[in-house]
Length: 479
Image: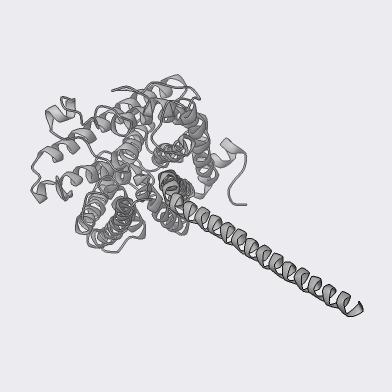
């Protein structure tokens, strides 16, 4: 009985064990199948993501690339604006160095004021007059910046244009230095910032008639091409230079500048060291002034243009300085540092209009011509016209700004006369510089003559002789 029971129990145990093993095997197979199914599902999902990702990235890529390009262009524009702003202390040091120590604080104060007032007034009305809709004059948009959309942040574009406006205003202060009432300087800075510069700027940069290339427009009908001023030889520099010349003429020379026989007497500035440092700063800032006017740096074309403009700008400055040094050495028997410094600036001013169009050789030629012409222009204005310009601003900015713009019509590699482009572009350049120059000089004459009649531009003789620092500002630059 026991044996039979034990044998029966063993059989049942074996059967139970077999069933358990089968169950375990079946469960394991089910688990493997489930895991395999999960794996297949995961792989399928991954493949689907990989396949769909390029399509999604392709659709998102244009926005991403566009944002990166806009960001790069914006940073470049603002960096250039900072460099141009840094030219303000350069102008201040040049003007202070070329004038006498008793007027230094007055010179420095004026360079601060023209940027402060110019920024506020240009934001208020000048920006709208320059870039608003219209052929002769833009529509003013008081404090409103929403009227313009050129693909760049409007606030950044306003800042970039503001520093150019301030440059035009500060040029005038040097030619009228050492005898102008500070209050009158503020008044005519207002007129430059809200009227003279924005209107002529609209003609050339703001969509006005000088740059209108549409079929049947005035410039296309007359010349078959438009006026070209890449960074402001005429728009900025000659405008400031011609206003400065007219202002200095109406203001009259400094006491002691001309003797009883009418001969000019030199009135040396107090520090060529400051003047030299100022020119170096201006030279540095010009690498924002000219290359920055491309207003873009994202594409290969932009990078090529910027690099080319850097090169032509630097070569023209070097050529202007070298040939001014040589001309002064031949003319006066010694190489003049002050004229060499102005020669560098003359080359920079001259090439600014066509720095994007001329070859490196063309840039050297423009710089050399402007450097030499500046020497004779300073002499002509001082001795023949008998207009007292303490820093030579009218020659450097007015004469060389106009000359450099015209020379672009000769040396431009595509439309220039010397490169087989015919006379049309040269005549368009000549016409544009003449119109803008007449506008600036004519408006300057009306403003200065009016101010002189109403309130008087000039300080009394006693204040001029003892210095403007104490009488105009109650302090001196050196103690």
